[in-house]
Amino acid sequence: MFECLFIGDSLAVGTAQFTNARLARPCTVVATEGATARQIEEWRKPARSFGVTVMAIGSNDMPDGVLLARLTRIRASITSRRVIWLLPYSRPRSYVVSSVAARFRDETLDMLRFPSRDGLHPTRYQDVANSLLR
Image (cartoon, rainbow, N blue to C red; front, side, top):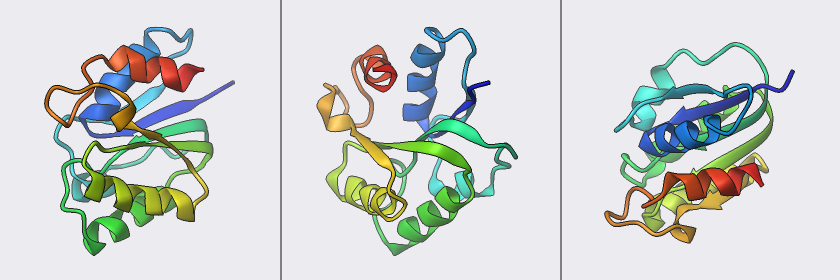
């Protein structure tokens, strides 16, 4: 059976909502609005392997070496055949996230592809979900 996971902040919450609405078997969601990498690192991760994991982490953190180290540890704790990172709208934060994605040979989906009113969230989460489901 195909297992999928969304982990992270409000980008994960919103995208998971629209993605799960289109799936026969919804993905597991371990996400909350405003979550930081420090908080997410402390969460108990599901102890199983996933076919796909979508990670949305970094938008609520300072883009520094501490974020890099936390993202690396979080990523190392996830067992998944395919990992897709949602890159934050903020370019400095996006660069940190993409460096972790590159290290693990993960995929990325840049949120700049999607219009935003506040520079943090897409105007239409369903567009992000559609991109993931293609």
